[in-house]
Image 1 (cartoon, helix red, strand yellow):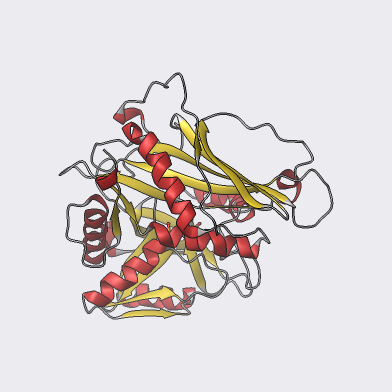
Image 2: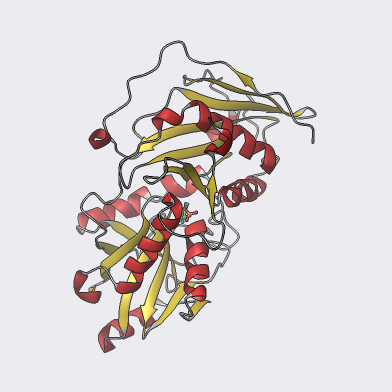
Length: 362
Ligand SMILES: *Cc1c(COP(=O)(O)O)cnc(C)c1O
C-alpha cells in the first residue's frame, strides 16, 4: 500500500479547554479530527486532519438505516514524571478495528497508516491531553457507511474518522466496587452474531437491560449467554473475571464476547505472576455455589475506561451475593496499580505495552 500524503488544515480559532474537574466521559472534544474516505474501486483516500466540525450526510446514508458501522476506544496518557505521551498497545486496537470491520463487511484499513495518522492527530492536539492523575485523552476511531441507497447491502463508500476527548479520572475517590444486576431476560449477543465486534447495534440494544439494572439500584449489567442464559459473558461493556479459591477464571472467547485488550493484558500479567488463570465456560449456578460456600473471593470487570472495576455485589433473580464484603479485592487492586502504572509510565513495562509518542514530537 502506498503512503498517502496527509493533508493538514489547522483551525483558526482554538476552543476553550475545560478545567480538569469539569471533565467527564466523552463530553468535550479537541480542536481537530482525522477523516478519510473510501470508494469502491478507489480504496481509502484523501486522509486529512481538519478542524473538528459537523458532518453533512445524505439522509439515505446507509449507516442511518442498517447500522453498518464500527468503532474503537483507546487512551493517550501523559506521564506525570516526564510529560511523555503514551498509548497502551494501540496496534491491538487497529487490529481489532479491522476484525470488527470484517464482521460488518467494511473494507480493512492499513494498520501502520492508521497509527501514523493517529500520532499526527494527537501531536496537533497534544495540549488537550489532561495532566492530572487518572485523566487521559480518550481516542475514538470509527467508520460509517455513507452510500445513499436504501438497499440492504454493504455500502460502496465509507468515512473513517478519529475524534479525541479529554476525560476525567474514572475513580474520583479511588478505586471502589459497584453492584451488578445479572440480566436474565435480555441478552447482549449470541454465537454467530456480532458480539465480538465493536459495532453500534450491540450497545443500543443493551439500554433496556441497563434500565433494569438501574431500577434495582445496580450500576451495571452482567450478561449471560444468548442461548441458555446460564453462562457468564461480560459485565456492561467490560470483560469479567472471578477469583475462586485463589485461582482466576474468565469466560472463554465464545464468539459472542468482545475480546478486550485489558482482558488479554490481565491474563498475561497474572500468568507472569504465576497466578493460575482459566479461560472457560462459567455458569451462574457455579458462582452462586462458590458464593454460598465462601470461595468466591473477588469479581472484577476489565476495560479501557475503568481499567479494573471491582464488583461488590451480584443480584441474580432473588439471590443476592455480596463479594469480599463489598471491598476492592487484593488481586483487583494489584492489577489496577500495575496496569495504570504501565500506562502512565510510573512503573516498569517489561512487556513493551506502553508506546511513547513524543520522542519525535518536539
Ligand atoms: C470495548 C469493550 C470491552 C473492553 O475492551 P478493552 O479493549 O479492554 O477496552 C469489553 N466488552 C465490550 C462489549 C466492549 O465493547
